[in-house]
Every structure is written in structure tokens, then in C-alpha cells.
Length: 144
Ligand SMILES: [Zn+2]
Image (tube, rainbow, N blue to C red; front, top):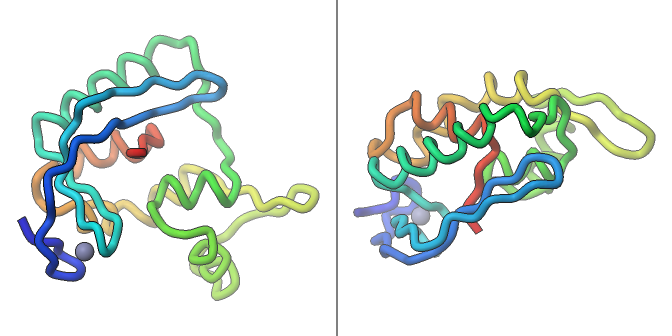
């Protein structure tokens, strides 16, 4: 599989995926996404994406944890798989809006997700559906 951004050949690499909500964290070991090393992007195949989604959804639906409504710069950059500098640039040129709490920016999760949904689909290729991606993204899953 070739990376849709840089055209490099992607390698299947064994890694783990972790998801956290508040103080809790779950880790799924042994997943094998295609990884583009130059741009640090990962693409999961349908089966793995579904598995991750099911685990995450069960966890989120358990009612034991609260999904944070507001995220800081670091959390947003993890969610969107971009650098914190990109987030600051987007704040500066008005593509992202946030409010300042003390010295920290706070982003509304719902607004950011709406803004980024189409890019998130493109970023991961065609191997998982938009619905899968929306769920995965909304749960804030990221691969280590
Ligand atoms: Zn690439």
C-alpha cells in the first residue's frame, strides 16, 4: 500500500493502540497497521479498525467514564494527528477557534470534530469507512 500523501511504500508494523478517558487507559497490543514512516501516518485495515472501535465503544458506553467536552492544545493535536505548532498556526489564521482559560487554550471537541471529519477520512485511506473513523476519532483513540 502506498501513502496517499507522500507516495512512499507503507510497511506493516506491529504496534499497540491506546485509548484513554480521564484517568483510565486501555491498551490493545499486537495491532498491525500500515505505517508511512516519512509522514508518521498509520492506516488500519477494516478488521482491526472494527475491533478497536468495538472495544472503545464498549468502554465509552459503560458509563464509567466521562468524555471530556473541552480539550487543550496537546489533546487536540493528538486527536488530529498534527503537531502542536500546526494547532497554533491554525489558531492564528482563524481556521480553529478556541477560548482561553488562564494561560491555556481550550477547544470544543464537537466543533473541532465537525471541522476535521473529511480530512480524517482522507488521511486514513479507504480501508475503513467514514462511520468507523468518526467513531474512532470521537473517542480520541491514538496509536502509540
Ligand atoms: Zn507518507
